[in-house]
Image 1 (cartoon, one colour):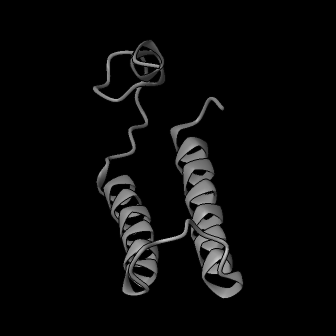
Image 2: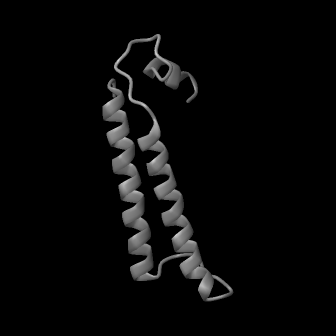
Length: 81
């Protein structure tokens, strides 16, 4: 994806998919077995919380229109992957 907006939209879709998977996991009780029953709900809440934190971090990043000299350009981001 060449456009930063497209990349952000793709990441948002992936995070929404992860959140949907967590909700399905909660409904079908398909998650790791825990010693204490209360830990199941804590585990699911932690997963949801981590996804929401990632979403908020994504929303806080500036989307630049610039070329290769911008701070968050595509070329610079590709170097870190």
